[in-house]
Amino acid sequence: MLDLTKNRSFVASDFQPTSFEVIEPYYNRLLNIDWNKEAVEDSNDGSNDHGVFATWLANRSELESCLDEHQAWLYVALSCDTENIDKRKAYDFFVQEIYPKIAPLDDALNGKMLAYPGLDSYHEPGFDRLLRMVRNARALYREENIPLQTELKGLESQYGAKTGSLSIVYNGQEYTLPQAQNLLKSPDRSQREAVYRLIMEARARISEDLQGLMDRMLELRHRVALNAGFANYRDYRFRELNRFEYGVEECETFHQSVRNAFMPLKEHMDHNKALINGLDRLRPWDLKALPAGQKPLNPFEGQKDLIQKSIAAFQQLDPFFGECLSTMDRMGRFDLESRKGKAPGGYNYPMMESGAPFVFMNATGSMEDLETMMHEGGHAVHSFLVHPLRLNVYRQTPSETAELASMSMELLSMVAYPHFFGNPQDLHRASYEQIQRALGVLPWIACIDAFQHWMYTHPGHSRNERSYAWKELLQQYTSSVVDWSGLDEWLDYQWQGQLHLFEMPFYYIEYGFAQIGALGVWRNCTHEPASGLDAYRKALALGNTVSIHEVYHQAGVPFEANSTYVEELANWTLNKMQYHENHLHRT
Image 1 (cartoon, rainbow, N blue to C red):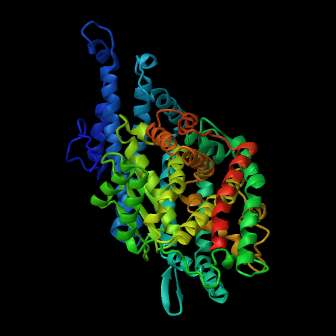
Image 2 (image 1 turned 90 degrees about the horizontal axis):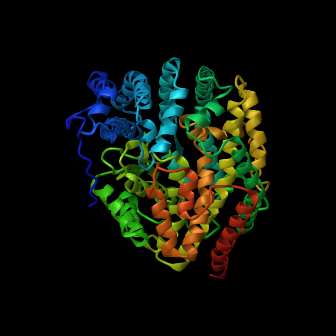
Image 3 (image 1 turned 120 degrees about the vertical axis):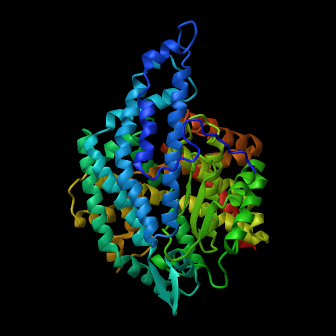
């Protein structure tokens, strides 16, 4: 079992941040230090070797790690059981009662840090980046935004509660929406259509609620941006996310590159699906369909089987990777199976103090669930790799780096598919489907990101205007092979199924940049397995101590999405997909 021990030296061992009254004294101790006095006493010869400042940073990090992990467990508890009133109250109390009181103290600590007289001569790996983030946070802070951000946190948690309760009844049996997705693989087209319509009718029941939720979020987020001196929330959010290395122009380049390089591949894949299924046109309920006589891939049976097979797969890639998942299993850090009352989706939640993260998902035994497990497992390995870094902020990796870890693992783990599938044909089919998803997701990522750009640069827009803008974008990123006629009403709220729009605004383009990076990492590891995997592991261990560009460079790939590079990767990946496709046709 990995040693994750980080002994507390500043915060009491029995500290439980269940009220502001027990938290505030620690902030006061950090704020009350006299830099001038401490600088003189820092060394015997009167010079300053920054020992007190380094300790102050470590103490602040320890406190933040405790608070981060406490909030993490509250979130995990609620997402595992969204209908539990006590868990809802505990989470809401922290974000609505405690967080608003902590926020100004965090800003005060940033001010205290920037007032340190030896700031310009202090050096440690990552400190320049930390300093830039602190100055950025200080510039963005507005006291009047605290109540707005508090309300937003409450609204964001409502999305999971509303969607997690959805289910359908088909042939007398109730299915959660993740479970119902498996029925869309049926070779019976009439069954697929019936299930698809039931799913969309379930979503329709909460569509107005989600429209209202988004209306309020847009209003609050725009006010937050105006208060901070920005013309719109997009520009504010880019700064809040510390996007120092890229901006709107790079996002638009990504959108264009996806249209040029990956939309033709999407058309090709959808055309093939129509041919294989003997259809002259695809309908939305045909997109996951299996040909007659072909059964869905069944890579595991239940949570225990998924965990054990995943450990074996990760062990094959790198013994350290396998030990990460084994440690999590022994510590009870998985909740993987779908059930009514769970929040939708999946995540890896880092635990900043204890080190071993928590993986949450809604598995039903499908190939998509295996992909999710490999994805979240990549995040989990990343959590372990950054845990030794000295400060909490160094372990809080930018999402562009975090998603490089997870999306690369989806592709790298294909060499370990024999742990999940017993015959060669299933192996080729699983790899073929995985590559298809890696390529097929990019147009959706570009569409969602472009939609966010539109929403937040058009404040005050109506729901009809939002719907029109959404469908205009969807036309650019949806295959012409798919026929949506007669389903316009459902198209209007298709975006509502993307939780990031509600819970993590503008956290989506990272998946796109990371998918491009992951294809490059996979290509490197295909050509030179040992050196490619070593570069990947070393890159992740850098955490948040260097720029995104430097992390990608260490991984052996560029952080860019220009058309030439993207088309080169797309063609290489298409060849890999066709290799598996040709093998399937032969067998």
